[in-house]
Each structure stands twice: as structure tokens, then as C-alpha cells.
Length: 184
Image (cartoon, rainbow, N blue to C red; front, top):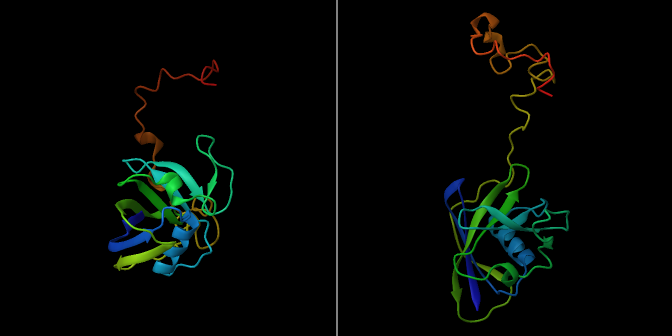
């Protein structure tokens, strides 16, 4: 039996990657085949997640052993065979290639073909994969050029310079009293 697994990405509608895999191959084999196909370096803490029909994450398969959610076993790519988690046509999974911004490829077991093979091989690649890592500064808009947070540097922080206490409608707030400590 041979699995045909297809991956796509919402960042590039034209990108699609189809692989054929021996069900006894590991998720690490699949990981290496994906990285080679899209020319990403193997320097990120990537992982796979098995998903339900609504793409909600379930079982995680990590690159290295980590503490995990107690709802699921801690599974590593090197020790987990594809057939351990992928059993039926239509099975969904995601491959997180940018863990910092949680960007991923959507995958699905498209077909179960007769025959045998070893490992994992790319059978089709269309379009261009997105860059592996976001290059934008995660603190952009929070930290100003002077290195201080916007609210420390006196800049407008979420429109606070336009706030006027006189514009606050006090009706409905008169009944609130914090004197009796009931709020805590």
C-alpha cells in the first residue's frame, strides 16, 4: 500500500506538493521530504498535527521530545510511523513550518494506492512555497525607534491622545461602587 499525501498553503493558492509514502515511513521521513521539496533549511522546531474535519488540532508529532498536553501522548517524528496516525483516505494533518508565527501547510491523505515502496518521494510540485520564516519585526508598532514602548515614548497609544473624559457618558455607571470590596 502507498499513501498519496497532498499539501497546500493558504499563503500561496497556487502552491501544492504531492508526495507518495510507504505507510511504514516515519513522520521524520515526511518532514525531510517536505523540506527538500520546498528548499527550507532544517533549523526550525517544526511539527505535525493530526486534525479533525474542521482542521482543529489534535495529536501532535514533534521534531524532538517535549512536554505535551496531557490529552495526547508525546510522539516524535523519528519514532512515529505514518500508519500509526494516518489510517484512512481524507485524513487531515498540518505541518507547521514557521513555529514563531504558526504558519503551516494543510495536508490530506488523498489516495491509498496499491503497491509498495520505501520512504517518501515527491511526485508533484506546483507553484512556489512561501518563505519559511516571517521577516517582519514582531515588535513593530509596539516599540518605537527610540527603543521604548509606544506608551512610554509619549506617542499615541491606541488612540489615547484622542480620549476626553468629558465625553464619557456616566449614565449606567452610577450604580457601580467598589467601596464594599465586592469586586474582589
